[in-house]
Image 1 (tube, helix red, strand yellow):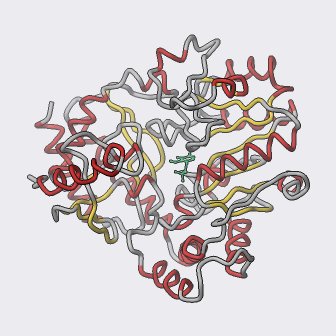
Image 2: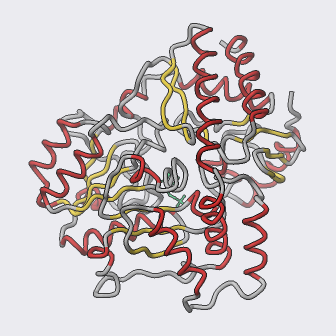
Image 3: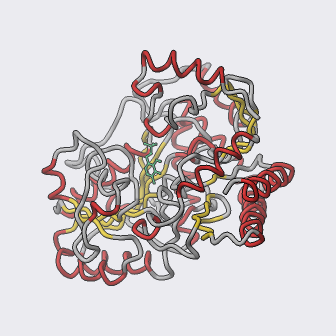
Amino acid sequence: MKNFEKNAEVQQRARKVLPLGVNSNFRYWGEGITPYVKKAKGSHLWDVGGNEYIDYRMAFGPIILGHAFDQVDEKVIEEVKNGVLFAMTGELELDVAEMIVDMCPAVEMVRMACSGTEATMHAVRVARAFTGRELILKFEGNYHGFQDYTLWSTYAPVEAYGNRRNPIPVPASSGIPRVLGEKIITLPFNDFEGFERMMRSYGDQIAAVITEPCQGNCAAILPEPGFLELIRQKTTEYGALMILDEVKTGFRIGKGGAQEYYNLKPDLATYAKALGNGYPVAAFGGKKEVMSIIGHGVSQGGTYTNNKPGIAGAWATLKVMQKEPVFETINQRGTRLMNGLKEIFDENGIQAAMNGYPAMFTFSIGADKLTCQREWAHTDKELYLRWAEAAIDRGVMPDYDPREPWFMCYSHTDADIDKTLEVYAEVVKTVK
Ligand SMILES: Cc1ncc(COP(=O)(O)O)c(C=O)c1O
């Protein structure tokens, strides 16, 4: 059993200067149970009390190679010694842009940013400018960062969403101007019929349909075969753009992300997270015709958009992906873990839907298969949480939140998978 006293002590200190004692609401798990981190290496993480964990949170996805991955850190250290910010363009960022264009089939031109939130904010603006329209259609349970334009119907109790034939967009925070609700249409994910109906009614007023390829912020629910393709087809038919938010899937489920996986060509795509193995870097890009309007009446920029740690982090991460069997290894180990967990659930007579890809997956208790957040709402979140709590106590750390996928990295070993399966076999048997 872990000693959590030191974490609780640090939480008391943090509470005095940080709201909730954290710098992002998602890092707060509750009083006396919120972990505070000391260090991490590879697939392992140590909290301030010295407790060691196999980490499956991977900072919510960015850590794709492993924590403190030497090849990446050495490049960053080498580069930052020559200055970190210049308000001028350097060659390293051109290398990164060229690698992104080379690896992502739908990206012909790209602009760098610092976070996924920034990337989606810019993509939405470009789509509005390109089409001359203002409406944005998004799906319930998808999260596209903290900007006000799309922070609707992400985490609300699904009862607030209204009837699925005529959903009500619900802001995910106080402080979001109500008037922005007039610019957003929300729909359940994987609702083929509802989507076609909405496009028939509003398609010629819609600037963009933005979607995560799988619901990376709602239990990794996968798109039904043909759903992403339908979005592509209908956006083209009505002159709207398709924005694929690859902040979680990009450089994670494969070298070319979801667009390669599904052989899909969105007009715009957004990236962050795995692009830099944890360094602050993001990007958005897409068709040359669309991206070319930037600078011609369309404003985009940012003081830190080519910050050296981020750019050097991305440079080194992409080089490793190009040279080493990163995705093959992750897929093989992730598949083993997913299958092993499913076997444990089956042996114990637990009904659980396995969602997502080997590189980012989770399970939802009390369902065989999920297609949208409205269905996920009826799964057993309480039991998931109690298992997570017990696993964390035994040195295996998934996120506390059942919506958040388990993330694999290149540094997870077979021994990590063995230990994780051992822990879950015990936890599933003993924690009811
Ligand atoms: C799909 C998706 N888009 C955008 C974001 C926002 O990214 P960031 O936290 O870097 O602002 C996230 C973050 O989790 C995400 O999962």
